[in-house]
Image (cartoon, rainbow, N blue to C red; front, side, top):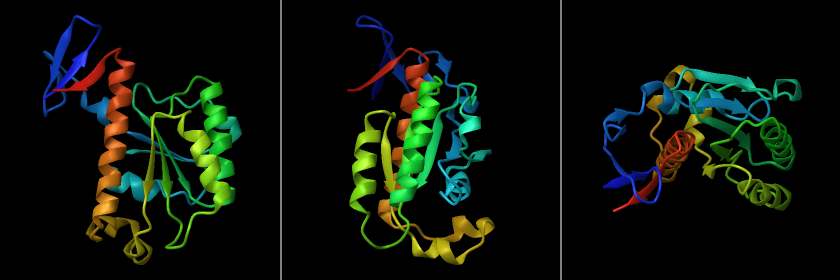
Length: 184
C-alpha cells in the first residue's frame, strides 16, 4: 500500500483509484500536459498513448510562461545532439519562469546509439526536472497514421516507459498538493 504524508505525523493512504484519504485526486489533475522541446519531438504520439487532450505543440522562447493549471507538464524531445540543445533551452526557460517540469521524455530517434553530446546534456538536465524517461525507438510507429497509434504492439520497454511517465506525473501532482509518498 502506498501512503501519502503531509508531515512526519500525518499518514494518508492512497488507493488504487487515486484517492488521497477521503479526497480523490481529481481526474483533471491526472491528465498530463505535453510540450515538445522542438518540432517532431513525438508529442502527438505520446498524447495518444497517454490518453490526454493536452498537446501544446512545440516550445518557443516566447511561450515560456506555460500554464498547466495544476496538471503535470511532460516535455518531449528526441535524443539527437540538436534536440538535446533545444531541451536544455526549454527546461531553462520554463524553470526560470517558475514552471515545474514533471518529466522529460527522451524519445529515441532511431535504433542507433545516442550521441555522447546528447547523453551529457540529458544527464545535466535530469536533476532539473522531476524525472527523465527514455522512450525507445518503436519502428511500427513509423508506419501508422496517428489515428492508428494504439494498434501498434509496443515492446515491454516502451510499455514500462509509459508507466514511468505516469508515475512521475502523479508524483508531481502529489508534490503540488503538499504531500509525499512512501511504500509500505
